[in-house]
Length: 260
Image (cartoon, rainbow, N blue to C red; front, side, top):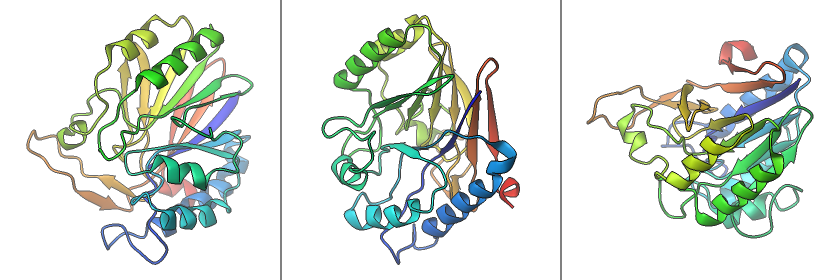
């Protein structure tokens, strides 16, 4: 049995600044990390903590410096992928000492754990809010899946590959890529996908594979399913995801009430 914690959409600001001048995302992340550490005796052992994008709001060095100080408190080894609010090179510098961070190109990575291989997939389009799977990333994924054959795989990517019904978020979702969909559909082994971006736990499917979207560590996107609906934020509506993988796979929501 392999257990992996997922957090997402931290939106850390430079020290002393608030998200939207209202939400202390740094305090929320510290509270989340402390709560998860306190929960480990009840849910452990947990092998990894994965951050599924939007580590910062501004993508600037000051925000990553602030995040580095906070992540020093993490009780688990962690990995991350970029989201649309991140800057690839600033994120690379932020995690340059981490063994999983590639020294150039997309921030794609692989780690083989006991019961599963976890993959980080970079969907960042620099300077844009939507995401895309580039030819470079697609080639990396194709070669990686070919090597993994029938081994269970959990793919982490920021932008969900399906529409959520929240039209304002779907408008900045993942660009359609038939080659990406076909690759996942044709792969013979078991694959699950874990995303962020929408700040709400939502489940769905893509290419016949189950997909889970994680909540944010500090605030949710408002639940507005109207076609003309905009984006609003709900402070304090937060959570994390526990992926419990083995002979039977489970995905569990961790709410603020679970963290004490």
